[in-house]
Amino acid sequence: MDSVVLRDDMVDSLEHEAKAIVRSEHVSIAMREVPREPFVEDESVAYADRSAERLGTRVLSPSAAARLFEALDIAPDDEVLVVGCGVGYTAAVLAEITDAASVHAIDITRRLVYEARSNLSNAGYGGVLVDRRDGAYGLPEYAPYDRILVEAAAIEPPQALLDQLANEGRLVIPLGAGEQELVAIEDGDIVTEYGTVAYQPMLVEGEQADTVERNRTHREDREHARRAAKRKKGWEQSWIDWDERL
Image (cartoon, rainbow, N blue to C red; front, side, top):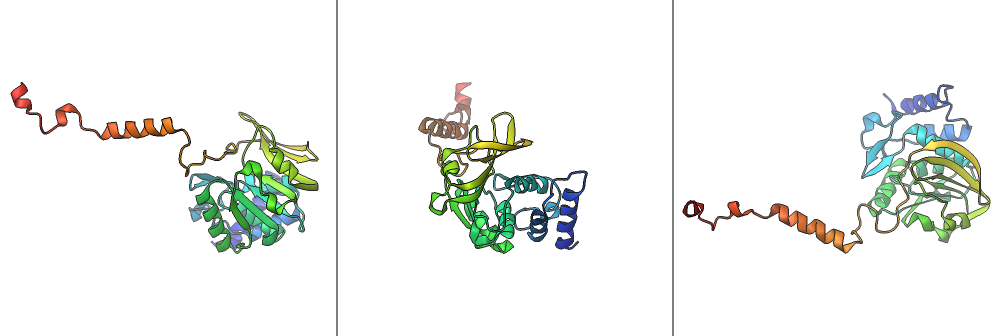
């Protein structure tokens, strides 16, 4: 089936009263325009309303992504920062609402930064700036931002991100540890709550999967265990004449 038809069906289901997730016209139009195939490895499920895995990260389901877009309440002339952009799908939709030059995205994992750049380029949004940064520190070089979207959970909103908001700016972030709540923050205060969610916690430098583990003892113990597992046991040694020992 044609991908345009699949996108229309996807958004129609998100607008239907059974879900009623997509309510604003600009989110509807943008999600109908942005292809999901460049961001979802299995194209056969690209438009199914379920999450997917790619390079060790979660690609949000269409309904989960739509909740973020509606909470962000973005305007066409807004400057936007996406923290923890993963493979880049949310950044692409935001670029469709505004424009690619107005969207900046960061991720702490280097291979995801490369992946997001490639995916955004393939989807037609190569103008989105994607950089490798620790999300807690944001991207101050291009601040202030009218909207900041964080796709990772934190106990409290990072102060650096609050500082990078423009006047009347909005930060959308999942807050909490065991139980998380998607919230919108303006002027340092929570102004709206959007219900419970489940996101991976925000990583700090050294915790990402593609980095060298900072704890040397843990690394050495793991290496010793790996070598011990491969080491021949006594009965496997060829230099021992077991017949003479019996």
